[in-house]
Image (cartoon, rainbow, N blue to C red; front, side):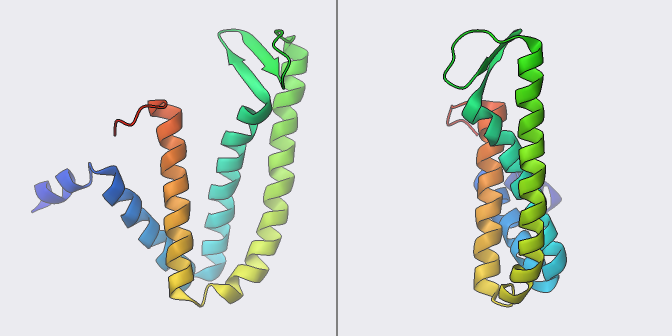
Length: 138
């Protein structure tokens, strides 16, 4: 039995659904904690994706925006730090809105499960992009 469960959890679709349902239930049962979880996870996604929009590089090369020239480390740090500040400000605003608004709307179990599944799927796709590249392997 335990081996069957362990084997089943190797399936990323199943684990994404399970985590999404658990998040949705948390949103429904404990809305204030659910709002905080939603904000933290969303902030993580933003912090992970935002630099991809205007920062490129690797192997000691750093490029900002559409500029294909390598930028000095000072400029790189300014861009990196700016993305952290922007994400922090956005997360704080999102937390304020989420805690006040979502605690009201988290009384709908269908909405909670939908948000949980969407959050779980977004985090899975981000993990897949980050660690497994653009391949479709799971």
